[in-house]
Length: 436
Image (cartoon, rainbow, N blue to C red):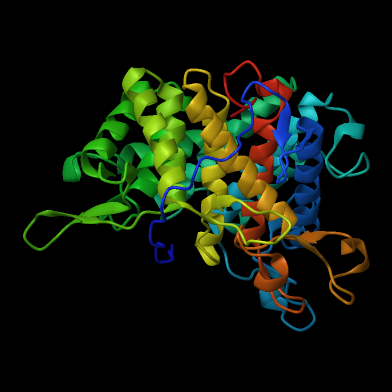
């Protein structure tokens, strides 16, 4: 995968007003409270409708399938048949698309799991059904297999499929992804070796071990009843890639010609997310202390100012641009939402995590734009485009007439779902957002 260059760390902001973690009221930019759960749920629904309408389509027109187009507008089939039918393939973008649909499905379940509760209206499929069609589309488009050359890609899909099966079980329907998870677990077992002291290889080249692969695999092991394997991977990350000067995780490590470990010292937002998720999933004093340390470091080093004088003023999580980087901050938001509602953490830490999620989601929302005249089809009217940067309005990042990337729209959707989870009454028991 391509990665953008990391931005330079920024100074810690001064303390700001934060939501009460035990309350369903969230502060608006001006400090006036607004209704929590319904406010964010409506916003998340709009993001879900916009992404699925603008980017979602059948694979090769096959019934029972769904995939996300990489770009909007998509190539016209009569001008570029190959590009319209296939186009570039980004496996892990689709995995996060599944995860976003599971988020929407959890909200549908909390609202009664009736046709009227569906994010896109009663006449359209539920989010869970659409996610299942997407999993089918991923398998077909990936050559009738879920196996990929990148272990981090497969880990993201395994995590999403596991959440989708849990959603199905809670809706009293059978989960359908046991075969997927069994196949990918074998891949993770093969990639988790003692080479370089532990960790998970990034790709089948087996020359680089990194946080993007090791952290989601650790989280997957933790969620599927293999805590020993999960903790061993976290211990390797702490010993090899945790930077105590920043309290953040570096990107990866490889062997040089002399057989020495050399760290790739880039710090990316998304790498902190699944580590945080695994630390919380496993629990224990040491893991929880490290989770709190990471939340505070993210607040100190991975935030930037939102535009002054805009619809929203504050500090937001930095974003990493387009391409693969367009997903990064959304992923971090997903796992910060777990920290925001985990009562094993101190109130200060929960409040910091909640503020980071809420302020970033607020900025994405404030900066969105509707489709301009002449953009899109009739059925796409009224849908929204979100910026690739929380600190920049969509009018500047994606002016009318330009192509919009799926990754960046999934990022904004993830941030809005994370805010909805943080402020949901279902998370008030402190165990984390439902279906985390």
